Each structure stands twice: as structure tokens, then as C-alpha cells.
Image 1 (cartoon, helix red, strand yellow):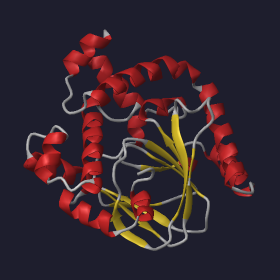
Image 2 (spheres, rainbow, N blue to C red):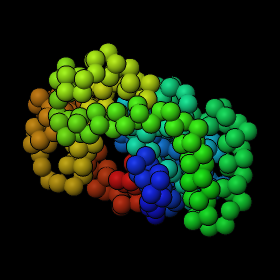
Image 3 (cartoon, rainbow, N blue to C red):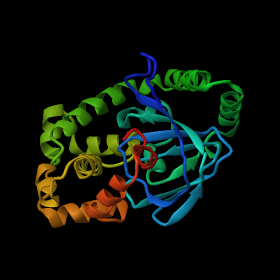
Image 4 (cartoon, rainbow, N blue to C red):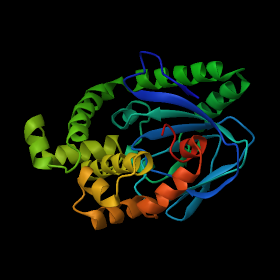
Length: 272
């Protein structure tokens, strides 16, 4: 179930998604999405992320930052989560800490602001129905937006830069990006690390990976064709980059995702 945010939050939040797992998942590959996910466990179920071999049980409220390392997911059947998927350029509007602190990590939000998030979780769990829970989450994000509105100028700059990278994401030309935007290369690097959590180069790699993943799943193209379509130097470069993110090969990913149903695909990359 996917629900769109209000008009006020639509430029910053892609959607709210409710996922209920209908079977046990054990050590499944979790695919980097390019987004930051705010995750609320709305069930009695258990889940855990394993990032670069380190296991982290999913708490009541979790912030999953950008992923650039092999990540696995284990979930018990009937676990339900409510996820707010935040556009990469917008994360600094909702969280005051540098976003690089959340990269490749599943952060317990009680460790960030315990009383605030305890109150949020209590209100969400007391609400009846998904619509009511999402309204509470929306109000939380609107309050955060008001607190961090001084970041809007940087967020708008990041959005423009990211749009340009997205349309030309096969290879990053940072000097050209700096020249076109009137910003220095060093400032762009700092802007991405502090407000998105990864470098412009890593951001480009995640975009390219996600384009390749869609082709792996939804087409019968050969790996060589996908490699060239997505701007990799060759098939070997494509396989190496894919394994850097997931720990498995593109062909293994294709076999796993096609073997399972859309619910499984959604579980391992929300919003797939």
C-alpha cells in the first residue's frame, strides 16, 4: 500500500508505504534505493538489517540512511512497517545531524531524540487505521520542516544539482557541474556529504545501479547490453559495481527477484 504525501510535503517525501511481510525472510539482499527511509514498526514482528556484516535489530522507529555497502534483510512473517521515503535532496529538512552520520547505518531514532520519538511512536500506535497513523507522521514532518526551514535554500540547490546528475547520470562530470551551477567543486562535495550523506560520485553510482537493477528485473537484456545502456565501461565493470552494492552478481539478483512475487520485491526495495 502506497499513499502520497500532502501537497506541502510532496516536494520532499516521495510516498508513505505500508509493507506486511507474508513469509519469513532470512538474510535476503536489500537493494540500495537512493532514498532515505524513516521506518516505523507498527506490528509485534521482528526485523533486522545486516549492513556490511553487522546486524541491527529494527527498533520502534528507525532511520535507514543511504546504502553503498552490501546489506541483508531478515524479517519474521506478519511484520508490518510504515515507511516514509524521503527524497535524497530533502533529508536535511527533517534531521539536524549531518546526513553522513546515517550513511550505511540503521539508526535507532530514540538515540537521536528519545523523548520526541517516544511521543511520536506512542501517538502512531494509539491511532486507529493507517490513514490516522500517516496523518500523525505527516504532522511530525511538517513540524520538522518548520524547525529546519533555514535549510530550504541548500535543499533547493541540491535538488537542481541532483536533477542534472539524474539526467546525465551515466558519468559524473563534477567540473562541468560546478561551472554550470556557479558553485565550486569543493562546495558541491561538502553540500552532498552534509545534506545527502554521500558524495556526488557515490550518488551517481547509486542512480546508475538502480537503472541497471530495473533492467535486470524487467527486461531480458543481456548483462553486456545493460552495462552499456547504463554507462558502465563494460560487463566486468557492471558486475563489479553491482557486487559492491549488493554482494551478489546481477544474474543471481535476476534469478532471485524473478523467482519471487512482487511483495518480495517490495520488501527488499520499498517502492520497487
